[in-house]
Image (cartoon, rainbow, N blue to C red; front, side, top):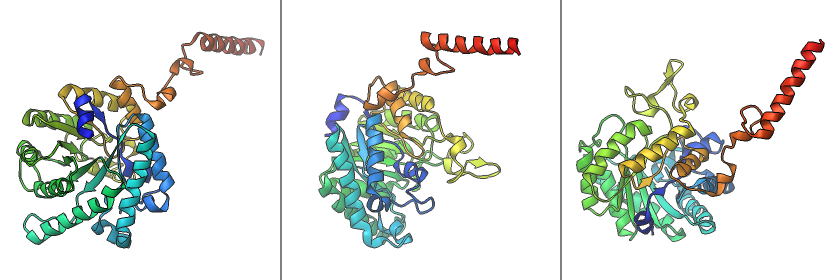
Length: 343
């Protein structure tokens, strides 16, 4: 179904669920684990609704970091199945209300070591395990993302394909244009495409300005569908990795990133530029809120459910240019001048 959508035109992804829920107070900065899916499922559902009403064509199940290694940190490894299954069911319930798709989600496992074959087996086991728990709840395809080793990306692809699902494989590049196992961007994505990845792309770590040049290279390297999911935090060319941005002389990540948040106008421009490059799946990552998604969708010419709440500055009491507003402001100004003259 995702492939049919892509054949019809650009697909818009959702926003940065993990960071948005942390901002709303339901994810702990540090572990960044998704136990909220079973502790406050209504909060997760509402955010999915917010993204869809803003224009997202795809909801990613909130299973990022819902693997054994991360859940062990918070003493919830025993909740692995419940979190993965519940998160996917929440996404499916929302998708059933709207014309959108559900993406199962896999992330870097934190156990993969390119020099340790036993870690490869463990990585694959963990991918298989998450897929096993998510798949029955109604996934349309799977996104594996924020993976920095080509070897780990290939294991994720193998696991998704073994489950009979379309695969979108997104890799992250912090500073260089190579994977952590030393493979240059173009070669890495060519290999993933040759192995059967339906969509290949780049996500996280970089803002649109620093990701789109890589996207151009990716577009030139492969003929299939490609994706971009940049962060909505402003980076510098000296420090493309948003997590090392500094604020007041110290690292801003994760509690002082607010000054670096991109505006909705900047994210809308990103969507336009991505489409011009030939990006098929235009998504986003950390820091992206529903208002960013709506601006992106509208910049691509769409009217979405929450377009009825889009800015209408013509009737703003101060900035407005509407005839009634202008007359009202002129009357108030005249009254103020009259009072000054009387005094």
